[in-house]
Length: 263
Image (cartoon, rainbow, N blue to C red; front, side):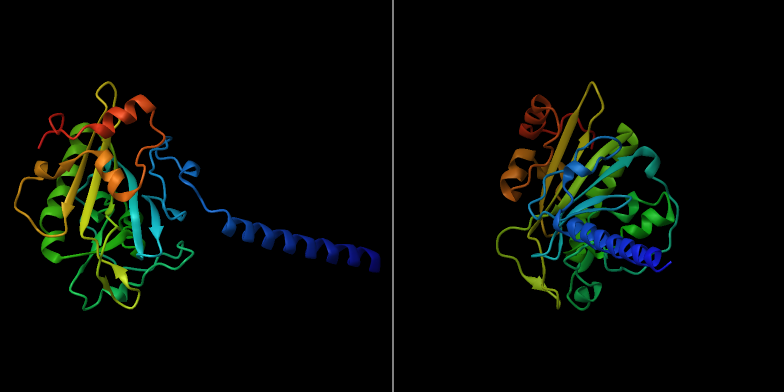
């Protein structure tokens, strides 16, 4: 009987050791974009931070240095666009960020909005997906007139395209380069520019459009802010669609026209 108890104790200790070894291994092996697929495809950008966070409604690459995502990527389907009136929850800290995401209190009295990267308006289909957009890893400091002005216009335009073209892939973020001011105890960087890329991977007319907008409100039409994806890649050092077939990637990323998109 003592022998059986001894063997059981050893087995229990071995299981505990294996569990903690696996957990430690998981911490040392960061998730990569190759581990994640959107709607069965992998259209995620590369990460310059090696900290990929997967949520149900979007994925992101978190920059600890700047305490925000360098990009947020998600699929936007026609059925996602609903007019359901959802109650806005409080912002809350993303516990999946192992280096600790910025706290929402760092935005208080900063003079900046908690600007969504994956908009709450794109995720109204369910309460869970809507609430998920209020994680602090999905926000960036934005001037109020920018957030409610031209940035809001671009978000509404993207939803219009989702309804028109049925299905899109969206990548968005602040340009985390150059000299930036910081806010709050967490020293969150305030981007000087924001970008958004929209990909319509519907054959035969595969198309993409990219925007680079200075962090200030503007009454200028959105098409005046269209740039090539190549230009954004040079600016951010991010490869936005590395898993696309090379011929398609080269063609899409070099273009900076908007003639295939209805404004």
